[in-house]
Length: 200
Image (spheres, rainbow, N blue to C red):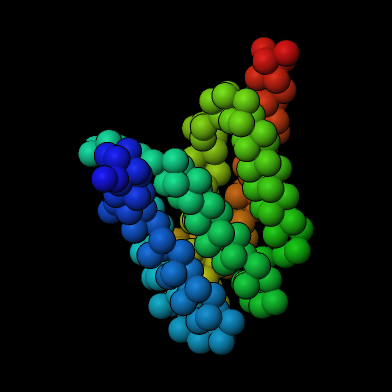
């Protein structure tokens, strides 16, 4: 006879928030395929925004119905970083996107550093969950990625938002995102050093 403990683990892992997370991972490959083909940029932007909204949805469901699992804690931030970083990487070959190699290096370097630090500290029982600055970083990355995707469309690239062109808005959002990304990385490192000192 199978014990209740053995049967409950897969049931907890295969819950609605985790299914949404894996669906978002599948959507990212569709998005990257569209970007690689260089067609349907407005649709690509819409698909990216939809993926971001599913991230908000699965987090809300997990908290409201207490469906937070260890699998979800690992996969949800991984998928978020995967799709956001992936968008910047696939935009890099297109000069019209405004994305530069330095921006991509800043985003990837920060994510790898913080993810490694989080894994190291949480293995030792420390709480290294996302902070407000980390959430702000993610929000600005999503905004910058969306605008960059939209400006790949020839018609949208001519838009004016008041006295500002959408291209200028895109560039400001990209560089603002980079600055906050680096700033959040410094804060997380400082926080990690403080935690390491308390752990001895």
